[in-house]
Image (cartoon, rainbow, N blue to C red):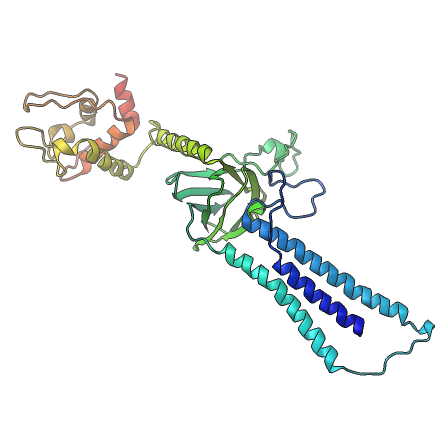
Length: 398
């Protein structure tokens, strides 16, 4: 009984000591996020929270191992040393109030000692205040959508799909025809890019079923639920590429929803942002894109306010004796080819002292949108009420 009491006191001391030791990230190579040969522990942490969780996990394992060895050690020692063949007789006592109290209070204190640092970790994981960057993450079958909402890169948006070719994956009953790479099923066409040392808040939702955004090296695992908004955060402290998966069973292609986050320097992040905005602008001005009339009118209103309002006025009435009105204009209400020609090449009708200048410097989508806007705004209701960028491109070549 004396040994048992000493052992339980030792367990309490170990639990309290483990909870009080600060978690420090161990130095190591940049985490790749893919499984490694003979890997027995968590991935190397690259955020403060992940380092805390990593250290806490190791200490919890130590405490549990010590308790396991101690309890079974005492049990086997007692069985071996007090066996009947050595002449020992069983004790006759039936119950002991002291023992009952001890084996109730001591385990309770051990659990409290383990729960306190774990609760601290959970509270820190939920603190998404004051982020440097906010990204909306949308789970869908079977890909991820990312929208940069606040911070540097605001307005960037893209989808992230599995990049591993089907020739490596194969099909049911069909063997793969290509050798699998080291990042098999863990590579995407458009990775998330974030700057190192910055707090990144993730706002998560889904548009079909429940998904779960998980990066082990960040200690981040957050469900994305249709109709709900959840959030989490991370601050990566090492430059590198980190990988994860959707870990919520979300359908037949659940295994094909990898997550890749590239952590780069501040300079490289700025360069990426500039490149993405250029790419998005080029995509928006793609002459082959077919726009809706609402898209053209929305964009056209901005183009008009920036380039046309000084002469033609916000109400489209122009300036009497100086600039032509657009409301009721035969050019605006007539065939659209004529208005396209005016904006591309300019016009001097002689009715006003100033000529209408050429606006060739505007993009095809800007010219198409502002023409569509004038043909559908104020009291104008032109028969040919929409102009596509492809039509402007064709007129340029004439």
